[in-house]
Length: 435
Image (cartoon, rainbow, N blue to C red; front, side, top):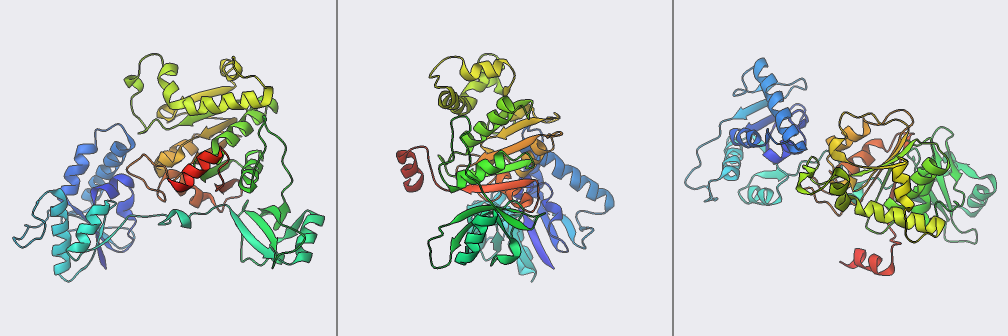
């Protein structure tokens, strides 16, 4: 049995982490309980996590003594430890909360127990390693961005196979040299060793068991896909059978612009959806809008200006109108609605095209809250750049966007695309790559 000593930030990051260590012993230092208590009145998601952890521990207290350790359903134990006296020889002279937690981990190790200290604090992991205690980050998802499902794959085939792909408009999965593909995963077929047939783009349809040829897309509100990933993204955005689309990649790849263009087409032109609802986190999620003067629309404007800029560009591209009421008339007609995520809990959102921009700043729980608001015939699009995270409690792999991509990659009603090539401008592309 291993002894996992949990830091406060792990419990605040995932309030269910108490129960994720199976048949091992989970040790919660008393100092962690004190820190949790400081957050319990916070109105943000951090406060919600703190209150949930407190409720979990209180429920366990009823089942047995937390001081001795309460048995879990998986055969492990959860214990609240009062800590140990810090010995004079302890290498950390500043006996603060972190030092006392590390002292407990070291004392358990000296009792010949296999101890793992779990924390999301990089410096604390370094300190733990320095005193000889094994320390790891808490990750329930891939450890790096490179390990996250990107939504498309390169496959080399024979020239006769790719010719058949173009002629018949698709090819069975069984005839491709791959073990498996996820539903709605895109494929770039190339000829082995090069050849005159060029390359072909397709999407895997799981029910049919084949990769169907991706046709050249048309212009949508003045926007036409400029590269392979944008073609993939537009194919998912305009497919009404896909309820969840995740677009992620660096700045300038067209994630938000494509999502807005597709949303306007399906809402205003095709009338498939009643409304285009656009939202983004006013970071941190739950912050009071009263810091800004004016009515709610005026308060929102600084946060939502990137959305307005994209809408203005789309109006100009589609109608040639440089200035004027443009998107404002769509707002007045309630065809477009801009809202903060602060007020989304408890709502039901039916038959709407919902775009959540900057989704990399959301926690997995916040994304779950958003997706569970989706009503009948609602399409949800999450966009974001996992390299540009402002939330200190998530990282490139553990944020809500990356978490959703991994969890939904096997679902037939969902699709994801990693967008690599910037199209905003040559300067923006250089900045994204060099800085």
